[in-house]
Length: 400
Image 1 (cartoon, helix red, strand yellow):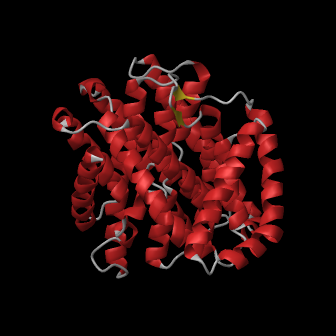
Image 2 (image 1 turned 135 degrees about the vertical axis):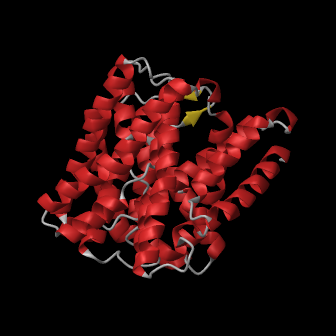
């Protein structure tokens, strides 16, 4: 408990400080972990089993909440935007893959075959769902055409990230437990389980939530039981528990009381995810961070904050958006992703990505979040929609 207590005190102080300069809490947590890494010898030791369980809880609830953001009916009505989303992720991954090949040829990073390179490329194509959505809400732009397009893009990215996580595995006691499911089989299973989740969400889930929603404790217990039970069933049937957690949230997304559910489980998710990113900061292999990595980190950051917005702007225009809407669309997604950092950590522990590759992804994601947050703050102030602080980082929930 001593180590966790110190970690949370450091995180609290840094989150308050970073909020004042318009930065997301995830950056504060990682910086806090880095600071704790420098004084690790004087800190009480972490209880690793407890730490692992709390981190896993945060990740599972993050997946559940990501699934709850899905609006199936609205997404189906905007199916053309899925083509834009597919193009953005595919083009981003292609550019990330080309950069990964360059980085490998120069000896900057080492990957274990195509799987490591694929993870590295995908990490450079993902944006932060929570930061993007909170920025849209701060500007009151969620109902605009570009806002709806961004929400569909975030949904598509979340699905891709969840599938990738399921192939790599979540942290386990012996490292990362890789699934034996082939990618094609996993995709087919995903659509089957998604159909079941949607059916349950439209029928049984609405009725159950209606009965338990008046008791906050019972509602929380049911949601945790539903998500954990579905994940356990997935393990027994050979399906990915990661995808099962996401689809558990999809089933809950149909209830009209979704906001109440999110309110109940958000604190637990923030608790676990905050621990996850603090611990990530404490375990970053800083010994590998030398002058030789400055260039690849700078190039990866440039891909995220400059190249991605330009390519996304072009794709949005092809999708029928106006020049102004396309500009907003591209600018909104010019930052790294929390899922990218989780994915890269998974690949690092699974030994398909080396320390340098892990560092490039994490550092580029963090730096891009810093740059993007300041850019968004500048435009909101310029548009008169800001009070001087970024509402998307006003709470620890911005970690996710």
